[in-house]
Image (cartoon, rainbow, N blue to C red; front, top):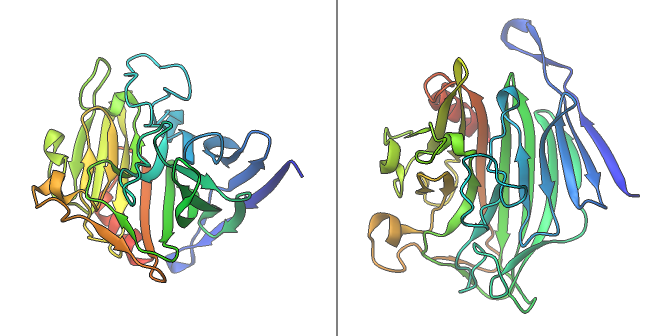
Length: 318
């Protein structure tokens, strides 16, 4: 079967007091030939999970409120005006790390690791949208496995806003696996250059839950981070929420002026000037680690999007 189709349809959601509000339907379709899963909101493209043909699974493109492209086009497409052609491993939205038992999964190349999806993605309808489930093998350049993971990516809508809930469970085999102390990680996105803090078309502002702004967000710990920019008569932004159950919550952020935004709980030496290796984490056999994040593509700036209360609501129910 070359493709499968699934519709997640909460046609009506009961709200407090018995009022009803129509929920937007999320759909997903598996394209085995193209090696991707296409996710639509109300019949319009939201994102695609490219699960093979890349050194790691990536979500690209991502379409936000008003049809805005939320991630950089290059290198998966020709560069859009104002895009910098740097860091070719920054593709859409992804989860990797720069030191896993000494293997670099962050960069790409013959000497780097690869994250290989095992079998075909599974599409599952859920009340809030649609989920895509995959299992991965993290492999050395010689093809031998370092660890395994299981990922659930849930997509949906809250009015005009769109979200991606990304949950990954990392499991060691017979021996411990060390996630090393490096800034090169981990749950990341490369934004549309409009959202950047510098560049020829950049108009972005950055803000964390702890009130850090601009270049000062880098390396600091926060429950959430947001990059937003004026678009037309309003603003559009992308926020990442760190779950309170995650390792070392609130996480530290590898967030740059050129549009890299990444949650990284491991890079404590680089971020906080702690001794080398302070951020190392040993993943032990039989003791998996689950990390959960929400990516919210929203109208308005951080205040207008009510990110503080939305983070609290999301964290409380998961």
